[in-house]
Image 1 (cartoon, rainbow, N blue to C red):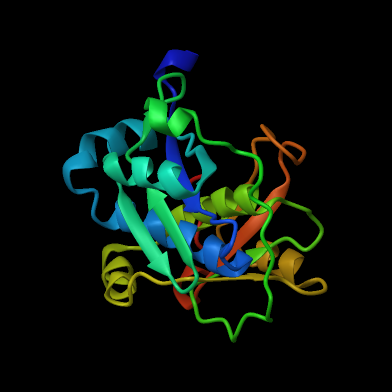
Image 2 (cartoon, rainbow, N blue to C red):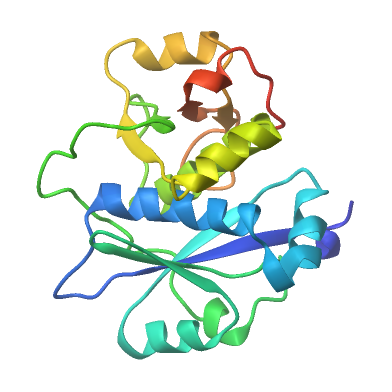
Length: 219
């Protein structure tokens, strides 16, 4: 496959200077935005299919504020509002042919923090590898990958039950040796391609839900 055939899923996070979102809220919103598109692609079914069949579920997170955010809202897409975070998912686009108002947005500058400890996790839970350091934008894309692998690993009944709940997810960082144990349990694992920030093949996230143990998800 040549580069001109590759597609990417754009995600835009709203980061206003005076009121940036909590990091965990932004990660969860990104994962939920991806799930929203997978569960109900609507008019973008063809674009989603062309992206999925390549087997390369690349996502790029950019930030917007003020007029930039308003221009992103004017483009085809869907906005997920989750507690303090707003994330807009747009239909997949060719890697080298982004809409101008998305292409001009910055990838850098997505450093976010949590001002309070996140509450108890509910499943499905997307667990981050505690051994890796990722910007919020990078982690948002990886959480989106984990959610997608979990969706692919679920059957129709499991997806229907999941969708009835939102579909919602929790994002947390695994503690101690828990991440390695979950990887060994046969849960869906994200192995990064190494385009940015971390080494190729790094395990960044694992998706956990009762029905996902022992499943083999596409990666």
